[in-house]
Image (cartoon, rainbow, N blue to C red; front, side, top):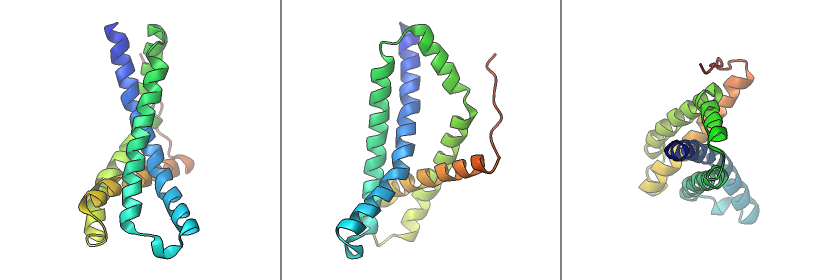
Length: 156
């Protein structure tokens, strides 16, 4: 039972990260489209965009974790072990996480520097990290589309 809970915990962490990355891309676009369509350009604010970005990212992390936990809690231990090994050796996922992390850290620092008087500090840092995560994912997808795919590792 110990390996089952460890494998489940690993997959929950990985899919929580994936949920954060996906909603960090979708939320700023959806927020901008909603505000512009519903209220016009005068209602748009950097503070609102950054706030919605980090709240959406955290909602994605919670949703990814919850769905993965519900899916793998009662899964067969052997099937769970196979899935964990597949996820652990998925170089495309590893590179996506790396790009997202680099973008998140970079934008968490740059966003407050650029928009210091436009938003609250918590929204600047957390929202900047969310936008940076989205930019990192776009960079990852761009590299994959242009032919710079990571080498596949073979589990031994």
